Length: 324
Image (cartoon, rainbow, N blue to C red; front, side):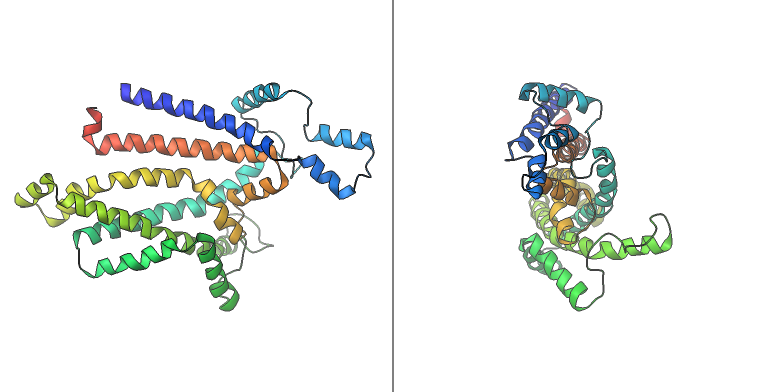
């Protein structure tokens, strides 16, 4: 229990530090959204209009410390403010629109690539020297290719040249959003290329790591004892070897789950996919402080929450930690 309480305290302290940086980092970017907007008018706006614009976007003369306290006050009430670049829409509304797209695509593909990679890695470690080992060079090569470059190749080949899939977007314009066949079919077609890019690029990492851990685990005494007792090959592979070999991969999987939002930026920009990563990319370009802070808040909570869950899973899978 004390170990669990110490970890919870550590995560709370880390969340406080990360959210404080979330306040400071956007303000370290040179310029501000109002100045960027005024550049379009080439200084021709009346000073009263400039003052009104700054008030409209929440610009204040308060000191940084006062702004920091106001930031925490709004954060504790779940108020992320109004988006500068999508005025007068609330930040929570914009994030809600993009979050489901990101979770549906990046989240599902991350889990799918982990399951496939771990399964193939377990099989490759158990059957060393067989045809399964031939998958390792191929998947490792695909993993080493720069992510955005692989995505551009996929787009050019299957969308531009062959016209098998849509070029960009999340669904065909003009369709009514809802649980109807034309919309869902369009969403599925638009998600196939990004999903293919994510899964193919990620499998090699999980496969290689799991295979190496399986080889190490198979030499342990408890696995040799299980074999000597005459247990079935499947039980030895899954229960004794696989269960212990997967522990290091769980930490990486927890991090990958936490970075679903942040890691989706490249994919969503390449495919112009309407998720939260693309929203963050647009917010940075527009210096939309409230929207940036809102997305960074989700990333922080997701990463810390995923790591906490991984710690709990470690306790369940490895009894040695419970005795620590």
